[in-house]
Length: 256
Image (cartoon, rainbow, N blue to C red; front, side, top):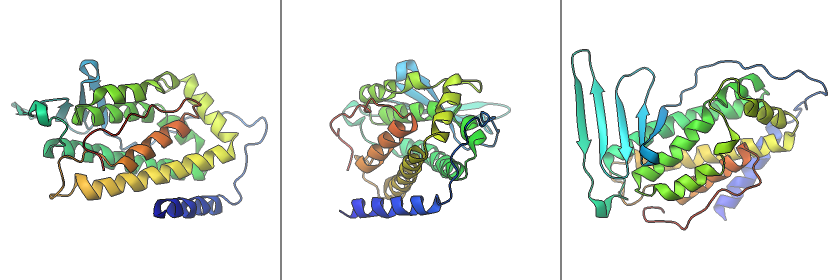
């Protein structure tokens, strides 16, 4: 009930802040990509989606989270240091401290990106939305598979990513990006839904971050909140305006 009331309040705030929103005029020119700094960490899917590499553009260091053992690599001018974090197969669904740190990096960058994205939607900054579309879908795919690798549950997350993989290209010249942003510009109600979904996902990710990822006393069996995953699934459905529901599997171990 509390969750429902919060969503209603959120909807009213978004609608109020959109007063005076100007619909795209017929014949208006296609948006031109406007580059800007995107804070997303890089998530590279490896080994048939059984592992995900996490890295940042400003550093040569990286980490690899897999279904079992994880890896940290630190590079300097003179040497490369590798540290392996072993996991017991019967407890591979546990979220280890190392995995929590990697998820925290990804979540923080995701939240920062979503906050900027929601503002761009509100203010009709379509060139920035178009530019982001070359990066965000790939990150979301990697984020799903990072969740799967950290919980030793990649199969279910692969099914989720397959529902939208055909909807994007990793390219600054993608016709899919152009078509997607053009469809947003013609659909004010769709934009409202996408802004609401963005705000809900931001809220749930921050809550998960505070409750588990950055909490020294966290429960290692809790890898992801059910609310966070539901909010992510909803955002994906609305972002791609897909009529195909995102695959939903029964809640496995490690979710509250």
